[in-house]
Amino acid sequence: MTGSPPKWDSFFFVALLLLMPGCQWFSNPPMHKPDPHSYSNPHETRVDSLHLSLKVDFDAQTLSGSADWFLVAGHASVLILDTYGLDIHSVEGDGQALPFSLGTHDALLGQALEVSLHQPTERVRIHYSTRKGARALQWLPASQTEGGQHPYLFTQSQSILARTWIPCMDSPGQRFRYTAELDVPPGLLALMSAENPTETRADGRYSFRMNEPVPAYLMALAVGKLEFRSLGERTGVYAEPAMLERAVHEFADMEQMLSTTESLYGPYVWGRYDVLVLPPSFPFGGMENPRLTFATPTIITGDRSLVSLIAHELAHSWSGNLVTNATWDDFWLNEGFTVYVEMRIMEALYGSEYAAMLSAIAHADVLEEVKSLTLGGQEQKTRLAAHMRGEDPDDGVGPIAYDKGYHFLLLIEQTIGRARWDAFLKTYFHENAFKSMHTEAFLSRLDSLLSTEDERIIGVQEWVYGTGLPVNCPPPLSTRFAAVDSSLDLWRNGDPLALPSEIDAWSTHEWVYFIRQLDERDSLAAAELDRRFRFTGTPNAEIGCVWYQWVIRFAPSYGNQRLCSEAMAAYMTRIGRRKFIMPLYKALKETGQIDRARELYKQARPNYHSVASHSVDALLGWKEE
Image (cartoon, rainbow, N blue to C red; front, top):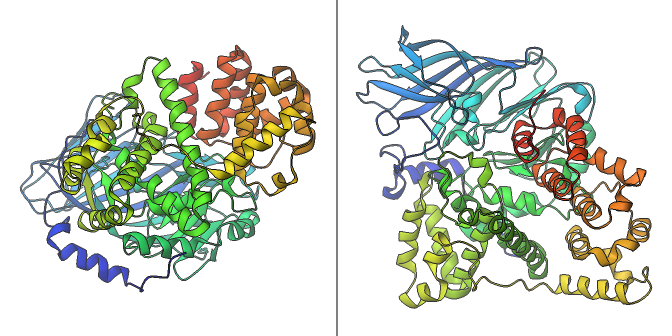
């Protein structure tokens, strides 16, 4: 446990950063690297800030209003923005109509919106509306919420979905500040990745401000019957009323997490850090929207055993939100660093043995991913420096960027020592605050840190540009998982129910590891395992995912029993988190049960966010009826 750092005024710190030579995001053009996933022209026309004015219509499932883009002074003749499925009604420049056109529609990238500018133009106002089915927006009827009485809306802009609800430069390398005015149905609370209200307004009108510059993928919006509870001076949680008390209990350590991270890597510059617990259809574990992390309810287990996800999203406040990958080819610079910082937070708060479990899980995940991609003829996708041109960047969200990236950084730490590595990271975050970073620029900085011998030991080029997992990858060393292995040996070599009493104190991670070690040898004991430990129907989504996978692959006769089959179907329909549903559909497909998978998916698909359904569609060859 580290001591609390001195208190900082975040606004003063941000202002100081902007005046420093290393952090002139406002006065100097951003580091330019062509982004294959954006039509925009930031090298010609630079945006400074955005003002949104939108009405939220639950009946039509649309947003409508205007986006005002304020331009950096210059003499550009055209502004090019990214759009996808937006209806552009008109465009004005400083109050005068401007000519505009929409380019040819691309199934991945959408359409370029080209606006011809007067000389000079300071503000461009775009009147527009979204269409029903916009991919970033999930509109939930009351029946799909915890309370069951009010509708709910949330967005997921990462990776390139901000363009489906805002005409914007939808590239991670481009930043802007923003303000917004929202008109929502009375009785509902509206939140954004900005300074947020804590009370519901009777008239449904809300104003927002984000003073720090952010890329478009960190634009976020949520509207629902929500309540707020403070967890500390700078932290709190929003949730539906029926979920709030459980969330408050689960996230009790958030303020301490924030202070711990500051002591490691410098001041938190975003003001507040709050978490919004979303309905279970949210496709990810969490989304690091500045000031307001979106989190899945599947991490609320009652024992705080899955709060590493909160540590991960908090870590993004430094790695990702503060220093951002320039393009989605550089995604590992966001996620590899974030997993590393997450592990350091968890070690500081819960001890090295707990962090070692998480590291071992990351190691197992990346080994499995490398094996799967290599066997599938996609070994090139095991490189850290990706090549995503023509591909959906969401397909790069996985263990390569996260866990291979983490192990690379862990190896650097082990090679040069934690003290030198921490000093480098603290300086890296400070000097590059509110800037984008591409792989080559990072490696140039790393080169100034490492000696020739360090580089030889680490093998930097092989890690970043080579395929697979290098042989010097740091091995997992978890004493708690070793104890799980011993328990499993006892169980296999004796009475099938004679597991030691210590298992009653196992964390979620130990149970997940235990189930992952089961194989066909244990299939005859499936009913006995389930009877004792009640895996079927467990409210713990992590345990449920690995249990149902094991049943599908190794105990199909048990899986065909009514109770387990119905429980799995309910699980796959209720939960939309891609991490949990994709392995189950994949297991069904790979065991010759694709018809069953499609039958389940037909029922579940209306509950999924488009990010999740897009992935399952491709896996199952699904064509919407």
